[in-house]
Length: 224
Image (tube, rainbow, N blue to C red; front, side):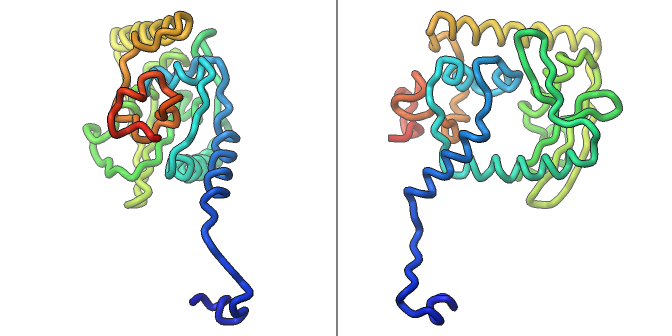
């Protein structure tokens, strides 16, 4: 029995409201999910089916812990960004949009909060590097910075990423190819030409029976 129950007696009834929890979680997510029909650089980094679903108007239904993780990451981002004059810098090449976290020494700087222990380059997730590189491409820079914050061990590290001219051009071409695949799938309404990243299904807001067109075929991961 809680202290307030001891003081107030049986007149105070406290119970977990599952329905309201789900409704408020969805409301918070809708406030977060402001992307429209434009193509973002993150669409080229993570599962292309997420971009397909958003661009074709399929509703996002956030899973438990997804919204909570976003809130924690956003709050930490805002604290770190206070140290910089520029933040959430919008850049575009006319087809792909990106919102850079900030700039450092005139180059893109991405901020990533994680529960992973990252103490060497080989431990940095590929998507962190790829997202930064696409930001570098859109900015026309061959140098970028990645700030990782391990929220478990409370460790901040900054990584410098540099590309040769040839590497920069290769990544630019790769970005164009990935962009074209997604746009072709959307225009033809044929998601089956895209390669799903199955590892993301367990947290994907589109992975439910009437959501992602490929969700039904992913046994054990699709929510009822």
